[in-house]
Image 1 (cartoon, one colour):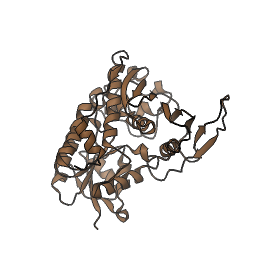
Image 2 (tube, one colour):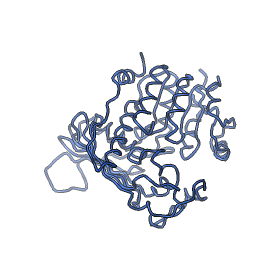
Image 3 (cartoon, helix red, strand yellow):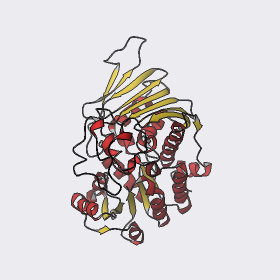
Image 4 (tube, helix red, strand yellow):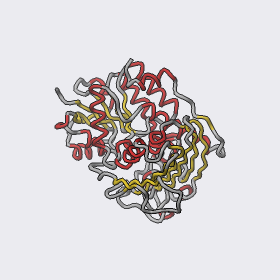
Length: 390
């Protein structure tokens, strides 16, 4: 059987995914790289080891040697590009978040449904060792039935990654409760076994709103990815437009009764995610997501705090980029694009994480007003729940 040949559209910060997708010995390979920026293309050619390039993604859609595409362009372009690719019959891997509005997310799902073309959304945290360890512990019944989930997300480099380019603009991202939190919201849904039904959120632009900005059209300074500024108030050269919140809190009720909370801060000194899941018979919590880190379970008591816990699961060492998930998620996409079948990721779940983040952002900007999350069209939900089979 010949290899699945993939075209990669967009070669920015996630070029590591293109590297993970170029695995000829495993049955899938990158056939062509595509970006409108010649400099980005040149860097990707060297890094991925593929010399065939295009500057217009539409040319990929008429190439018979391209079976599937990976879309990693800025978030506000996802709908147009994904719909074009689906209508051209190219299996699509869409990097998270799938879109920046509920309407755009539903348009992508509708295009996949109408064309029958396979759609895969890359929520790679479902393939990270720490998340799978937590999910396995819940599935074993270590904490009984999950009832509440809490997430704290400290983003030490947030001022550099999200406030020095298009991520800082509302019309490009909606906000960081959607763009940055989409991963975590998806994990909350996966661990809790339900989707967000109602949200209320608060937040503000506390630190980065008044710092020096670049003039529009001025590129980011060289070395910005390696030389992060500290303290946060020392950051310079921010995007010409800074509109999204740098700290936010979000409360959720899920459709199965679970209550969840998410907190995000972009001026913390460290980068760390902390998950807590409390069930009817115990509590679990992650302590790091790298080598030697653990997921701890407390399921006897009642007692005072015990740091040693009742059970400690070692998180598997990450192998490869993006927390060790890139290789696994590309293998799953390649298998799905070629033959279909069940996947750990879900386009419906991806839409619901966008919907939760989108409605939370509306709530945040309306004084915390509780808002209902619009449900997905049952016809689309049923189609994707069947594994995209009519």
